[in-house]
Image 1: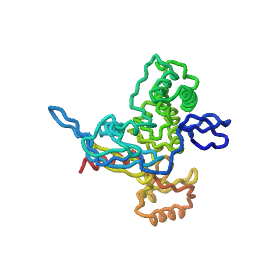
Image 2: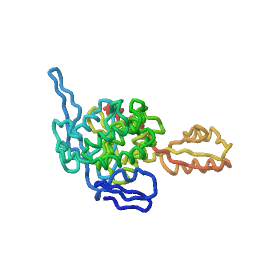
Image 3: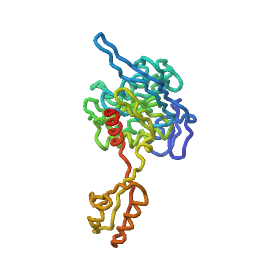
Image 4: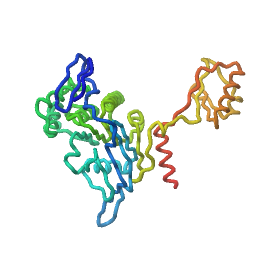
Length: 341
């Protein structure tokens, strides 16, 4: 049971409720779980598909761990092996070699799949069902009682912004609405682990922001989130760590901050309507871009030398900002290095 917080309703696995005046929030989509441990373990996993004509190596010796309460992103181009690995983690496919565990158990065991939510890519609901009917169906499949299903349906439809459309047929839903309904279904039994396969694919920016907020609050409440996606900007905003796959091989596994740490590139903003002499900028290899000065320096003394030169020209420096590498740039660079190896 989640301990009640003043003004916030909290829900536990038993389905009981601590009432408060605030409207539904994502912070109680899952009951809080214990201290940080390894929730997902992937050890030297390989997967080979065979036919009478050829063999395809989908995964080759992939290893990593995901800790409790962490948002973990699995990145890769189409055909990299992402969906194959997710299916193995869900017990829907078996590795050719290696071992995976979810909460310390092999995922082929029914116990390992309890309180595990899954939003597959390109999921489909029967169009004649309403959103509420779809959630009742999935709630029964999850083994929830009717009272819990009714309560969770109301709360989660509000959470994903579909309260006023729950009675509508799904055939009238947009792609973004269908995706948000799928997320609500995946959260029905308060999962401790949530697997998401391209959760924001085809969703407009407002819908992506809504889904991202739900996931961040679920993570804060203790849910372990595993995201398989090629939308790297969304992963960068949501995940703590990522693993980058290329042709079935793990190229890199690291924290998002570690991969995108500030480089030796800086953006300098001068006081409005001031401009640096072009010959000065050329000496430092700096350029002007969108009204700012962009420069790459070998070290901090060089940066300070440039700033001193600008001040000597009676220019007022309003801001100096180190530039972070985008996760997309890091991904492309790693793939290019692999292809050139």
